[in-house]
Amino acid sequence: MALRKILTVEEPGLHKVSRPVTKFDKKLHELLDDMAQTLVDANGVGLAAPQVGILRRVVIIDTGEELVELINPEIVETSGEQDGMEGCLSVPGEYWLVKRPNYAKARAQDRHGEWFELEGEGLIARCICHECDHLDGHIYTEIAYRKLTDEEIEAMHSGLEEA
Image (cartoon, rainbow, N blue to C red; front, side):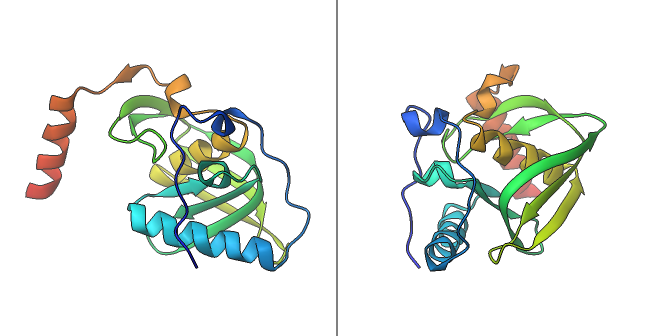
């Protein structure tokens, strides 16, 4: 396993549509393992392959209980609405307010090509939508409606430290 460099928003590769994965081989497994290590090292919640320079439809999400690998994910159902703060490893130090579905279900393949579903509410739904957007070349700031100020971010971080 190796840490991968996380690309930032000005990198052209982040704005391109990723190609489907067709080979479930050692190379894919190495990418998944590297992405998992990179996500943990960056203290993130989700990471898409384009963020590490690979234009393939691969995502890793930390559900709080496990790291879930989604290959060729498709969002098959959403409902409700949530309005909240969002950040991105490719947009370091910035947080914006974004409206997302409160529930999302994705159908995806695992590292061996077997199909499964991941569904969730709140942060999981937000993460599914955010990471799938990366696969289509979109960054969350495109749909965000307000950037949080440094003072607001500081207040949120100090509130978390006190809790």
